[in-house]
Length: 124
Image (cartoon, rainbow, N blue to C red):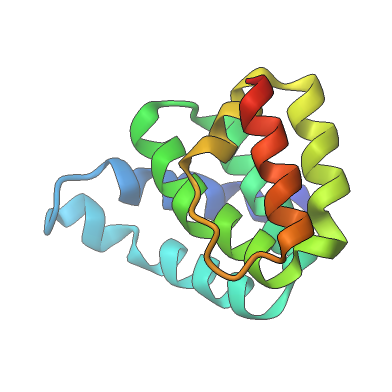
């Protein structure tokens, strides 16, 4: 999937998160959230790119909170060893991304991945 194809998914996911519960706006954007769930289940590299696209598009507290406790937490819980270096690099160059890591629970992260996440959050 190209960045151009990923962008509308990220934007729809954001619109869903910002819409009032049960609103027509939320209903209209459900397919983007559903697509994001499919990505989360089957393509960790694409999930990482989606996380970055969402983060770069909207850094509001509402969006970042859901991004942190949802897609990012799942990526690191199920694919942490493969992505922790990329996460560390992004956190080192983007303080807002580093703060994003503070909104996660350990969930299923390995000891090493969780230690590295907490080291980032201590610095931010």
